[in-house]
Length: 263
Image 1 (cartoon, rainbow, N blue to C red):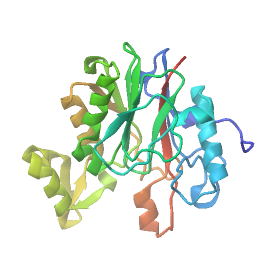
Image 2 (cartoon, rainbow, N blue to C red):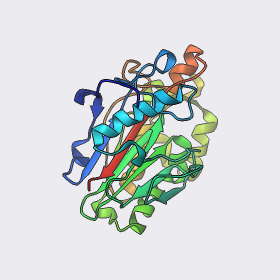
Image 3 (tube, rainbow, N blue to C red):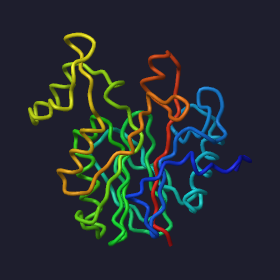
Image 4 (cartoon, rainbow, N blue to C red):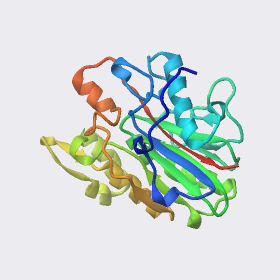
């Protein structure tokens, strides 16, 4: 592992609702870490063009915070799907192409990486099952949140005991979308128009992704919340795909959200 200073406690976001003796979790931003240049900080994106040694070093720093060995972290190959799986061990070989991941195995950390999409961590401390989901607008609309809850139930969870917390995500003031995207949401439920506000022009809208995610989670019967941080609006704290696109940069880093059952 690359030599690096341990992450500072203030650089890790923890949700009080998930802070139980039997669960370790963290929403990691870009502060700390060993990456440089465009990826300056704690880039955890295996799919980025950052130096692989730096990415693995950053992931090891995050796992040290959770008290988990770096080789005990499982993150899927995210494809904006509505699918979730239950895992019992780290992946060997090609990672599964899903966007929700669940485990009831102590000492195994599971997580997702994001750069504007919603990272959701799930915990059922009573039945000792945890989950993580990558929820961009496609995944959230396509059922990844419900699929992750269902996968937790197959692993022994009770949705009435599940708490789901949304980590740093792009927020409505910075998320302008077109009418075609809004139409995709309204096609399934016209009441979803409440998540859209007028944008800069008649064919633009501002989308409330955090509001939609929390609503879906609440409607699914779990306790839900949002940490209230915007990836786009805080460039020193978080990576952002949209900010990178607006700046014309060739690539971007990803932040990690991870959770584990303590041994």
